Length: 98
Image 1: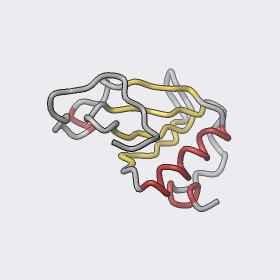
Image 2: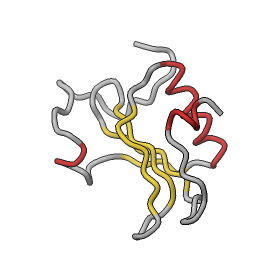
Image 3: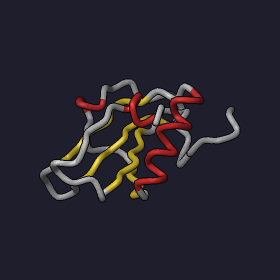
Image 4: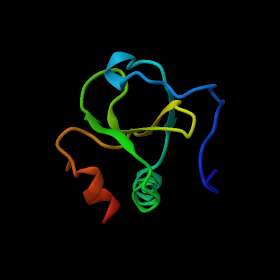
């Protein structure tokens, strides 16, 4: 196992569903914009697969959301609620290389 990761609970086997097949089951962590950017850089550097980066302008929880899996298949989200509609929407790669 790596030396930097989040593990909330260990599954006997990884989740095999795509996020769109089971979109509501995950743990979410609200972070600052700086932490969000730093996470993107670390994920890119460590080659941690990112499922999706979403810029959510409407709904109960708005902001930018980064989805990924922990080592045993638990879906996790980092959420920056400071992002608002009309702000730039850089790709994951653009954020990671900033």
